[in-house]
Image 1: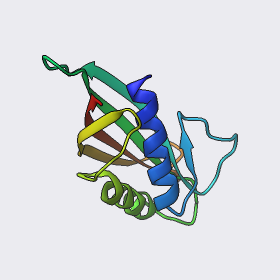
Image 2: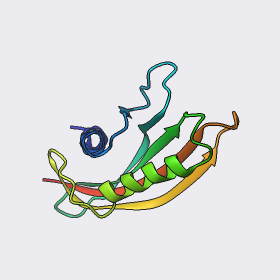
Image 3: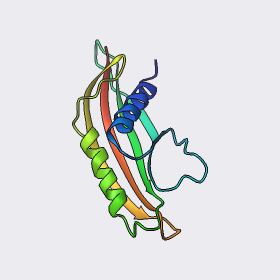
Length: 132
């Protein structure tokens, strides 16, 4: 069982249920996707073992894209990032086969992409997990 895959599935379910915009997993967005949407992206996993337990320290990137030319700036992307923060930061997350000790926001960065239109917020969450 892959800790990162089980976490990815759980985060997808939380965001897909809790947000009103489309959520895509592993960067698999349809060609020419428009409007506001969320992509669960890159992750890293570092062993975080104890004497009698296997654990993982995982970081997970989440991207908010706003490709609506009427949005004018970063307001919509930042608001959606705030919704994601509220759903994940310090929340009780249930991952199959694991006990989640904590989920914390590490940073958020927002920018206008080089096309001058697309808003992009990037967040990184750190999740500490142990096997059941």
